[in-house]
Amino acid sequence: MDSVTALAPSAAARYQGTARSPDDPARGQAAAANAQQPPTPATTVTLSRRAQELAARGVASTAVLPLLVAHEVVGVIALFADEAGFFDDDEMHLLTDLAGDIGFAMDHLDKEERLNYLAYYDDITGLPNRTLFLERSG
Image 1 (cartoon, rainbow, N blue to C red):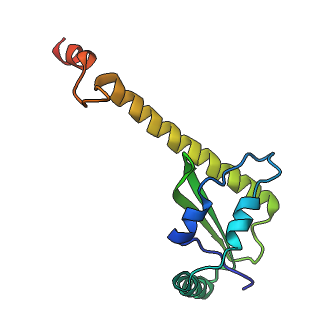
Image 2 (cartoon, rainbow, N blue to C red):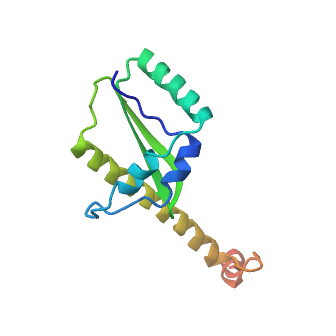
């Protein structure tokens, strides 16, 4: 096995704000700079154990992509393959776009939920507004 990459919660925080458009020439530079930071001893031990567990299960390649909503990591997509070097540049580009699309959709759902709340409740007091009263009474 050449290498196995895992993303610990402490490392996930370093990816905040690194989402870039596919045409941005600086895309990936922030992630590469973050990856060069030395891991903490606890993270190193955890990653070593995970790498051993994955290798024992036949995993030779891993891709971990952060899901960003409003420049915050809210989750990750982890993909595993039994072939070394499975995730080439083209696939990583597509997977990065996919993670961006999922993050965008999650952000859209959050905003839709917020708008639905504001349609029926006062933002400051949290009390039901006239629209909700008329819908329920009518």
